[in-house]
Image 1 (tube, rainbow, N blue to C red):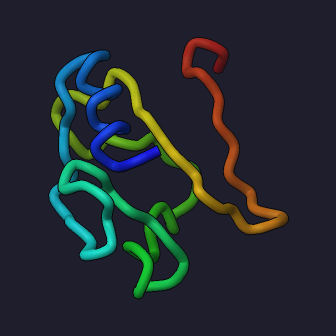
Image 2 (image 1 turned 30 degrees about the vertical axis):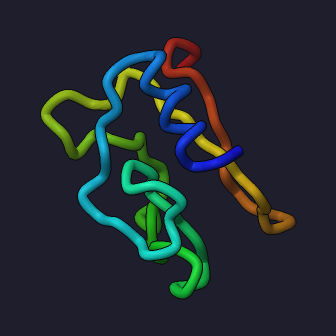
Length: 85
């Protein structure tokens, strides 16, 4: 999935809200690239524990599109719809 295609799909669902930080390896300016390697993406993201992405904004995200080309074994990332809490 190219960066442009991911942004195109996201734009079809609604207005994309770009992050303030752009990593040089990001495949598109509207994609926030995260990694545990600073050469590959932004590091130390979400390190404070449980959080909801976008809550630092006046209006949090209505939805979020993610793409994981690779993941570490044994990670502790979990996803849950808020209506199920």
